[in-house]
Image 1 (tube, rainbow, N blue to C red):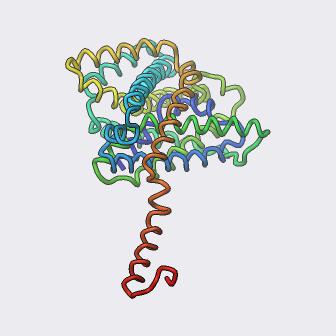
Image 2: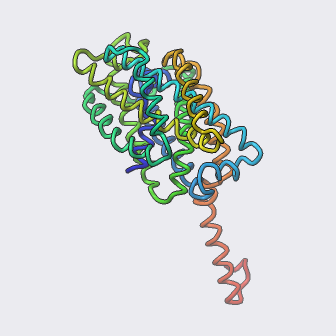
Image 3: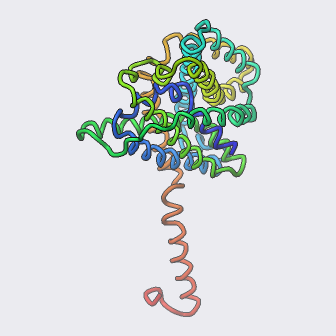
Length: 345
């Protein structure tokens, strides 16, 4: 459950809860079929990364074993992507505080930076934050259920290709950013069932939010579409829940950056510099970061996951062919023991 909460919290951040990410990567009509595809992709990628961490001893061990000389390059891309995600979460906090709670725009981001600086250390704090906040987030999302869902893929073939590209980019982006957490969780022991639980919960929550957004015209262009649908006390409550979701993703995004800072001689200065840079980048706004930068991270994630799949051979070769091959050889050896030839097996 800790791993399921952590992975759900990694995906369910500012862009997800506000609907900004969902309207960017999923179509307005016939979205349920694409969400079902994303659930299967999430589950497969989560399990792959978990098994890689278990086999190679965590995220760093997986990088060295599977990427060789390119490990440094992919480690750098991960660092930049996590930094951008931290900035987008800070931008989401600013939008939620200003539009939903009528607070000064930079109050919540500054408070979050201080929280990360003093308490964002290691995966124990990350698991604790997610386990405490994710149930509250899920309760609020499920309270919004009730709108009819739209199954079936609609539109022309070009639209289908665009939707498929968007779903792949979105899933790869989130799995890429969650890779350090999942791999280190795999190295620490059990909990792999949490991968499937997180994938299913994420898909159901996305379906509820997209159904809500699709029920009203003109809200998809808003910076925070879900917030635009609410009024009064529900608006303030959603802003608080959105802030909680942002914190869960923020801690997950900060995790690889904190590991990097801990290796430096002056870790305190590095932490302060990274947080200051993320705060400055957040001034561009959540919508612009999601629109232009997230697809690039998704492309990097697709390459990363493709290399993991091909090099580790954990999803295909071992389960599908390894055991059968062992059975054939075992029977051949048994036949030899009884003085029979191989063609007589």
